[in-house]
Each structure stands twice: as structure tokens, then as C-alpha cells.
Image 1: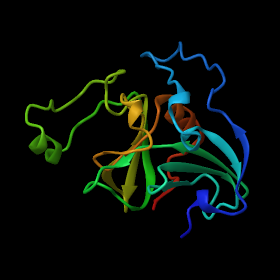
Image 2: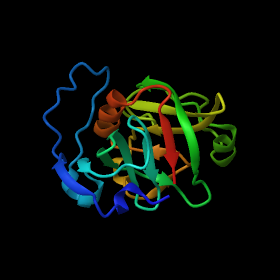
Image 3: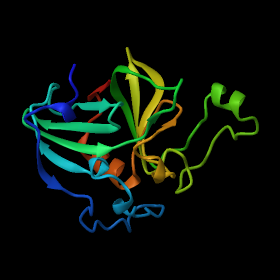
Length: 190
């Protein structure tokens, strides 16, 4: 399946790299604004006119281009820059958003504990939590895949292969996406 970003009919409608001055004062933890000028323009959030290959409300992650697209309508997508799984950790497939969480706690997997002895069993929510401000939990056949689309305490990783398979987003971006996506939404990672 061709990636949304490769569609010949794609055209930029609005670049929102300086996301409107959203007030994050009601968040329980600080949301650090990211200087988007340090990122290539293709990783800035943007609304695009594009023929979307998936249904409205779904998410397509293009791992090769490090971009996530939320399908707003058959002719409109919202694109964000992301970090993807590091070599040997990349995940591809089709899933659904089985759960959403704001400021989630993080429970490293047994594999992560084997790779990093001494890693806590639980990392409390907050600005230093690896899941960041929001998380979308990916499920297949009613079971948690342990892969997530989530914020990050390491925004400099956007545009890279850095994670253990999860899709990382700048906290400001995952907060925006979280408000748009519903539990049950289809997620295609290609």
C-alpha cells in the first residue's frame, strides 16, 4: 500500500509547527513546548489535502518516512512527525486503539528488564516518563500488543529510529492526536 505522504495529490493546507498557543495549565504536569525550528519541515504537524487510503478516524504510520497520519476525511489528513522502532525492534501490522490514557504510568516489559537490569517495574506519570503526556494502546484480536503511540520525554528523537517498537510523538502532538482519535480506531503501521 502506498504511503499517504507519497500521494501525488497531496497538498499542504495548513502548517501548524507553531501550534496555536494552547494553554496547558490544566495538565497535571508541565508540557514543555518544543522548538520546532530544530526539525525538518516534514516532521512539523500539518493538515494536508490527500486521497486517504484508509477510513476517516484511522491512523496510518509510515515508518520509512517517520510520519503518522490521522485520516480526518476521505480528502483530508493530519500529519505528524514521529520516532519509530530501532533496528530489530520495528513493528508493522494492523491494530486498533484498545485503550487511551492521559499521563500513563509506564511498565517496562520483561525483555526491557533483561536489557536494562535495575529498571523499575513501574515509572510514575510525569514529564520524565517515557510515555509522555498521552498513550494510545494498540490491540490485535482483543489482546494488548504492548506497542503504543505515545508522547516522549525525548523529543529530539523525532524523525529517527529510537524506540523499542513504539511510535513516539512530541507531547504537544500526542495531546492533539489524542483528542481526535477514538477507542476502536484502526491503526496501520507500514
